[in-house]
Amino acid sequence: MSTYTKPNHIGRKISRIRELRDMKQEALAQALGISQQTVSAIENSEDVDDEKLIDIAKALGVNVDALKNFSEEAAINYFNNFYDNSGSNGAFAHGPVFTFNPLDKLIEAYEENKKLYERLVQAEKEKVEFLEKILKDK
Image 1 (cartoon, rainbow, N blue to C red):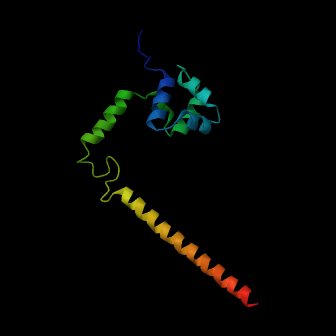
Image 2 (cartoon, one colour):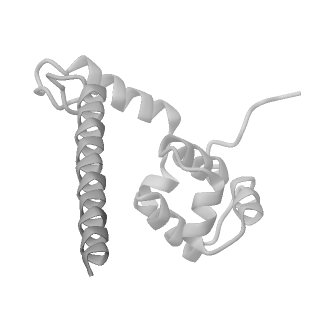
Image 3 (cartoon, helix red, strand yellow):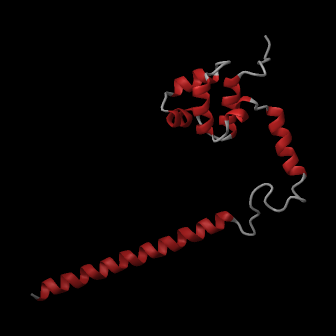
């Protein structure tokens, strides 16, 4: 059994770009206003009509030419060149370089929100006590 797929199998290209964009079939289906089963059928099709291809490209955030001419090897070479030239292209070749641990910042934000929530709860308790005192004095 051969695993060879036609190099111009547009459905496979759609599938691969969707996967690289970390998008599930359900999300693409929702963006296109179709069912997940229809997306699956499109991804198994060798050809897709141009009008539908435009909509799919837009939903995937690429242009139609990029979709039609997508090649796994070209994508790998592109990203490898980014990696190889990262020293000469500046710090953002692979995204931002953090000088802190983002998880620590997230935990700090959580702790600050927790303290704020506790202060709000305390203020509400004091308000209730004050109102109860006023009612008791009447």
